[in-house]
Image 1 (cartoon, rainbow, N blue to C red):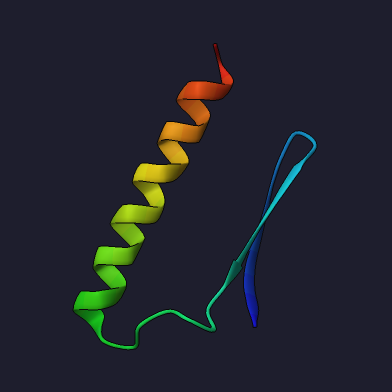
Image 2 (image 1 turned 180 degrees about the vertical axis):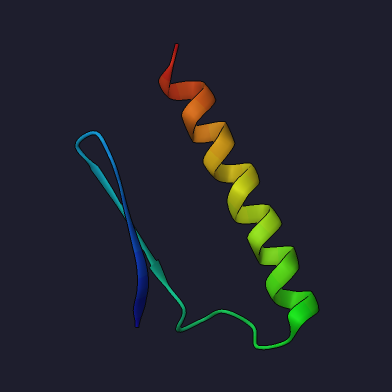
Length: 47
């Protein structure tokens, strides 16, 4: 299920929680990884 949608210019990012772990610790780990990947995408898009 899509729980959040972001728009960055012409790009749409949809967050689907179907495969998200249910424990707080697992969610925190995935959130950190998601942010790390997102930051890397933004850094590379400015080149």
